[in-house]
Structure formats: C-alpha cells, structure tokens
Image (cartoon, rainbow, N blue to C red):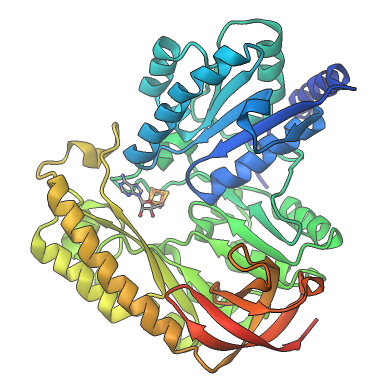
Length: 471
Ligand code: 5AD
Ligand code: SF4
C-alpha cells in the first residue's frame, strides 16, 4: 500500500519537542487560546487539531477574546462572502493587539492557500503574526515558537503536497460524537470550486489508522462518528489494493461501542451499488445521505463539470430509496452559475420538487479567482441570483416542513446529545435521519439511545415525548 504521503516521524518528533518546550515555558502560567472557525466540517475538525496542539502546549480555551494569548482564524475560501468576513474580523482584532501587544494572532486554512490573500496579509495586516495553510497544520508548534521568539510575521504556506498527518493531538468539541477524516483533498475540479486548489489531490488515510482511531474513540465512550472527506466515495482509490468506501464501512460497523456512523460528502457520480447495499445492510450506518446535486439543468451540470445528468441523479435517488425506504436525503444547490437562464433555473426547481429533499444548503454562485467558471461568459447579475435563491429557499422550506410533518405521531430512535440550548428543561437529540428532536427528560439520559414519539414538527427540529430508553 502506498504511504509516500506521510509526514516523516522525524518531522513530527521535532514538532512534539517544540510543543514540550512551549509547555515548559507556560508551566505555572495561565495562558489562553481562542479559535474562530469558518466553513466546512473539515475545517471544524482541523480546528480541533489546532486546539489539541495548543492544549498540549499548556493553553486553555477561552470564549473571551480579551483574555486570549493566542487567537487563531481558521478560514474558508469556498465563497467570497466568508473571505470578506474574515478579513473584516482580522482588521477589527487590531484593536485587541493594541491593548495586548503580547497577543499572537494566526490565520490558517483554505484562504491562506490563495497567493493574493497571503500577499494582502503581508502588506495590509502586519498585526498578524502567523500565516499557514492547509497542508502544514502539523507545523503549528514550530510557527508559534518562532512568533513567540521574534516579532516578525511568520508566513509558512506550502504548495500542494501529499501530506497526510497521523497522530496529532485532537481536542474534540464533544465527548459523544467525533469527526474522523478518511480522505483529504479532491480530484473532481468542479468548475466553480476552489477546494482542489486549496486542499490538493485525493489522499486517503490507511484503513488501519482509521480503525485504530475509531476503536480508541469507542474506548473513550464516543457513540457516533462522522467520516469526513470532500468526496468520501473516492476513499481508497489512491491506495491501490481492493479497499473502498463500502468496505471501510463494513470494517467500522464491527467496532464495539460505536452506535452510529455517518459520513459526508458524497459525489453522485461515485455512488456505487455496493455502497447503497452497505448502507442498507449495516445497522450502524445511519439513514441519511448528503448528496449535492448543485443544479437541475443538464447544460449547467455539464458546465460545472459534475459528470452526471439530472436523469442519472434521479435514478440514483430512486435506487437509494428503493433500498432504504426511510432515508433522509439532503443536498447542496448553487443558483446563478454562469450561463444559467430562467429555463435552467426552473429545471432546478423541478428537480427539487421531484426529489423532495429533506433539506438543502443553497448558495448564490460566487466567483473564485483561478477557477474555470470565474472566466466563463454570461455571468449572472446579483439581483437575479438573489431572486432565484429566494424562490428556491421558499420551495425547499415548504418541502422540508411537509417531510418533517410526515413523522408526526411516529416513534423514532434518537441519540441524546445534551440539554437543549433553547429550553433547559428539555434534552436535544437526533434521529438516525439527522433531524433534531427536543423532549423532556433527565440529564442522566445524555449519551443514550431512546425511542421518542414525535408530537410537533417544524422544518428541521421537532418536539417529542420519551417512550423508552434503549441503551
Ligand atoms: N459559489 C457558490 N457555492 C459554492 N460551493 C462551492 N463552490 C462555490 C462557489 N464558487 C458550494 C457547493 C458545495 C458547497 C460546499 O459549497 O454547493 O457543495
Ligand atoms: Fe469542490 Fe466538486 Fe470537489 Fe466538492 S467535488 S470539493 S464541489 S471540486
């Protein structure tokens, strides 16, 4: 099996030594960190790794920015809006640095893989101490050490390498549910998308490393895992041998203690029968599929380089539902892709009506420098995009409401995740189909599976009554 991707043990040892050194210096002191995370689950999980390293170095988490000694922004480049927001935040934070000159400010993530952004930070944001990208988060201890010991801006962004890093400390946000990376990067080059440029080509983790991580999680009491990748269906293709995503699911399903397995994201062109049967047959794999369709018109799908047609997509949905009748299907949709006419958009609305998604993340097309779509002719006006987005959201909300209402009066299995933020008398839980259910119950039930009868429904959250605790 290929393992040329791996960062050398020697390099990791160096980083561990630096972590120990910083921890020694921090001993006896109260030092705090704060991380602001933008974008997808992949980024959320990268932030858990950065937090893990910071905690090893003696820093404690704080909500209070005024108290922070290290402040990180883990950024997203998928849409312009998020980029503008981050740069705005980084400008604001200058004030904080004026009040506390010892504060270390770092920026990481996908935006830092864009040359023009790094240039802008170098020129216009000298109060930023550390800049690093997506391929070298393992080097964060060394970069922090440099920043602590010199007052010049440390920029360490490397081009697409095939780095897979095992063994980083992770400070997980939850002690019941965990994100687990299985594949990094993407080979698909959808013409609107910047991810293949910021996260590089597909790199699968070795199955034995994934299994070891999940076993360790199970031993620590975790009950649910979500397997992460830009395209989990490609898992294993780059490893050689006969491992693939469905086979990985079989292996993970055998791990004692884990009750639920979820995954995201899937690409329609790679959904195999083997995967559908695995989802049908494996008791822990939840009945939820996030399957981004992006558009309903074949002309637009082609321009997006999605490599499936609307007919093919609808066939996959039929097959999935024939095998897993109660499955929830969610999607991502972009409106206003270059060349999208009203006709094309109506095809998207039509597809949404046909599939009847449980939920959809909807976006206005955002031009990303360096991607093919950015220089396509017939860019759509913002006003038109906005109008289409509103019409799409209206339709999807109506369908989401109707789909949830179908559950009223039914008894469903939920995993109890915590106390409801809105109503402290209630617990918050999720169905296998990933819908949120609130119900009255004792805190001692957190971490358990239970049957709950649905009494009231909204688009994505529901109210219920406890029927029985399962385990
Ligand atoms: N503009 C708008 N939405 C985008 N996405 C990815 N790139 C862009 C872009 N340039 C959306 C896609 C993807 C989701 C994560 O973000 O729908 O599935
Ligand atoms: Fe971007 Fe397409 Fe890859 Fe998803 S599959 S990360 S949309 S290029």
